[in-house]
Length: 294
Image (cartoon, rainbow, N blue to C red; front, top):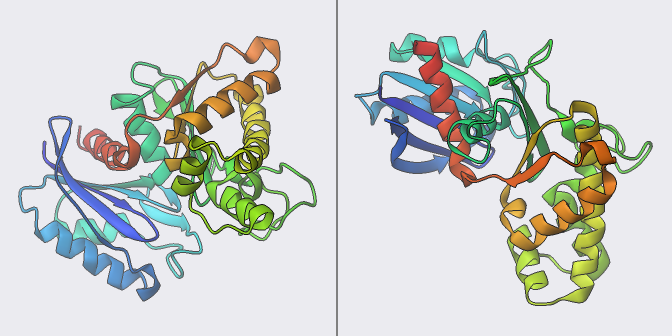
């Protein structure tokens, strides 16, 4: 089966054709979400026209999604005016093929569960660290969605009551302290350096002791929240994704610190680096579309 798969993020739409478990003809175009829902739909239709052989479309979208009815239940600030958009119905009407849509982290977890770090494991927790922190929960080989399809929003659990203001408007959220964006902010506040996640990792690999101390403090917050998730769910496997977790030094710091944070009976959880990188969402979205058609 040939599936057009799209990973719609705040800055870019990544796309590819998925067939026989592989991605081909990959590319990307700017999302331009600020232009509104109609402009985004037209961009998707133009991309779809490039793949006349497609038999279905799978979409990974960076917002809260109702995958059953196929609409955006709660759009992030990056997608103003998108809440309530019935994207599945609109695209199926225009394209004449089945369309599936799900949250980006859910799709990444499906990808990792089928072809990545959690392949062969029916029960696992998947967390991604970037601008925010997203989570997905797999139980018995299927995603756990919760009552309103919003399960796994671990970035907004409270880490410090009355703490830093989060982008969501609340205070003390986990992602306000433990996201990559939070690390970047902390590096600027403590060292006056404007560095992205990759540059921070390069500096600590080169032996910058002052910066490593800042990263270690940030890792403490990462592990405090991560330990809470593990204590609550008791998963056998935890997959950590996002660009910052691809760095071996950072990942090893997290795994070592987490060991100290966990109660003894929870230390059997296997902590794994995500393997699929930025293709996980596209692979997962395609697999979701396959399930829709079977």
